[in-house]
Amino acid sequence: MLDLGVTAIVFGLIFVGELPDKSAIATLVLSTRFPWKWVFVGVATAFLVHVVIAVAAGSLITLLPHDVVEIVVTVLFLVGAVLIWREGMETEEEREAEEEHELEDELAGVPTTAGFGRVASLGFATIFVAEWGDLTQIMTANLAAKYDHPVSVAVGAALGLWSVALLAILGGNALLRVLPMQWICRVAAVVMLGLAIYTGLGVAGVI
Image 1 (cartoon, one colour):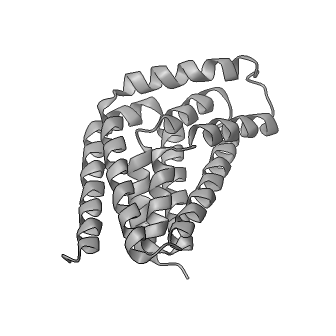
Image 2 (cartoon, rainbow, N blue to C red):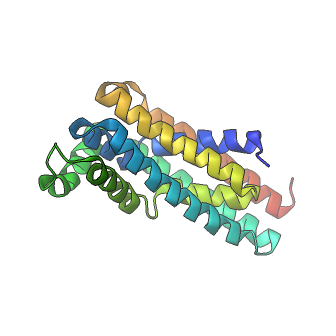
């Protein structure tokens, strides 16, 4: 059964966490060279695979004693707050330059006339590799452990990641630069810190 409240919370956190991520920039770069629908199929599939892996990992955490789960969740929220704050300290130009440089070698041997299979595979491989150990993967596993509602968390996380990918593809550089990325990251970091404190106080029996 889908819990829309959990799905909405997860969507918001993952959406904000993914906005400054290099995966969004990689998606944008790929969509400027190849048909965006083909790119999105590969990117969306890679995100979905990572969501399934992260939710499975989070579900395993819930098998631990309740207090241990709450401690793990608290620590992961703190880690997430630090990581997303650091993401916000990097400028858009620095992120784009770094990601474009990393993609140069991968795209060098792929002609702009490449077919659907090759383009979708390239999109999948790029995101699949980039998302290992990523902030949003950690957040998804953490949220799956916290709410113990795998389907709702998976739907919210997948929709959040896909929405950022579409925003990058359809909005392009102009839209990404209009967004106050540093402040978005800071707000998200504060929210995650608040969740860590709230969960930690629960473990301590204060609330």
